[in-house]
Length: 189
Image 1 (cartoon, rainbow, N blue to C red):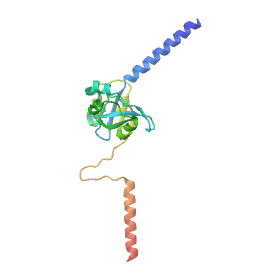
Image 2: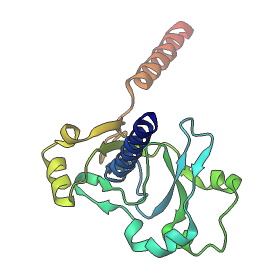
Image 3: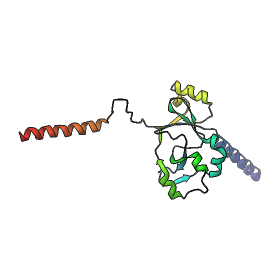
């Protein structure tokens, strides 16, 4: 009886593990970056961003070149197809260039190739798969956060035509400097 219960217990654990694996494959990752990294290769970093966790396999990139670049969505969002995560960084190498490599560079070389280790302005992780039409509709209706978990919210500094936006702290520093200059001039007169 004990042996039978143990076998059933192991079987249930195996089923649970299979479900966990399947659910992680069914996630949808939607993101925006600070720059145009659409054709650049992402690598996964450890949480503290001091260690490279995984690097792409050249043969996989060769086989999937057209299927690995992100899909462009509305409002600058991208749909991941390269299995990135919140700790991904981008290297200064396109998928095409990476596929042409004869061998994978040393890890120390990857650190030199990183162009942005904090690339995400927005990063959403959805527990289910959505079509691009469904995602674009969520983006247009501002409903991404209703259907997905938002992991990153960083608003890029926007500089509009003929206008420069300066952080408030710098404005105070500049005003303080100007008032010091005016005070010095009055003092010397």
